[in-house]
Length: 261
Image 1: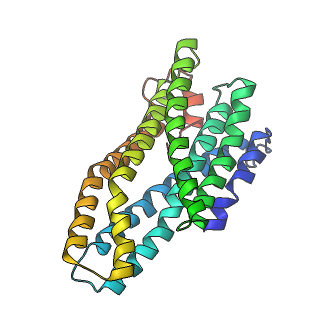
Image 2: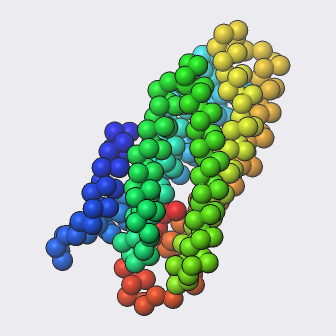
Image 3: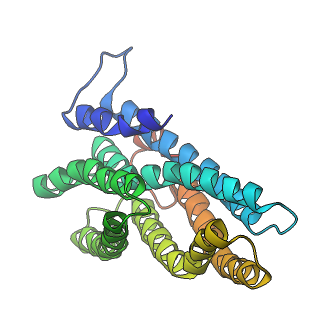
């Protein structure tokens, strides 16, 4: 499953080259839509699994070994939604290009490069976790996401004022929701630090009531941000399906239904 996600940028680059199938074949727009939907499914599903596993870590009825095993599985499962998030803007950007929302050449070039570059950073953070290099990469990833929030907001503002999204205001809504997801994710990271530190402490020293309280308190603080991210994700999916405010011809709208953020 992971390698399938890793290979997605190749498919996106293939689509970006403007490949068009025959009337009865796969078009670039259909490929981009499929990838977009696939990323949505593999983002939300594993993220719910991560949420469930996080509560196993703080469940004091389980043995320390069971809780640490849950933490290890959580770390592995959490990679999947991170991969999906890193590729989502590239998939969505190419899809909007194919359904008739043009981008300047420089912006389209950046959209195509963003997915593989962000994916490489996500994988590097995962593979180097627990090392000084991994800590540095995690900080880079944190600030990169902060920059992406500003970049997305700026892109939406520029596209809106130039009139490029006048016929498709729902696209602006999806992008703003993506920026909100990034923001909630960063805020959640700040709250989850005691939980992650507590896992390391439990592995080194065993369970203790004080450490358990810290981990449970940290997890409770992350809950509002997790729920907020899920709500934003579902709202973005709804915007893609129903496309409110779309002013394009009905046949164009029907051919470009977007089911994921």
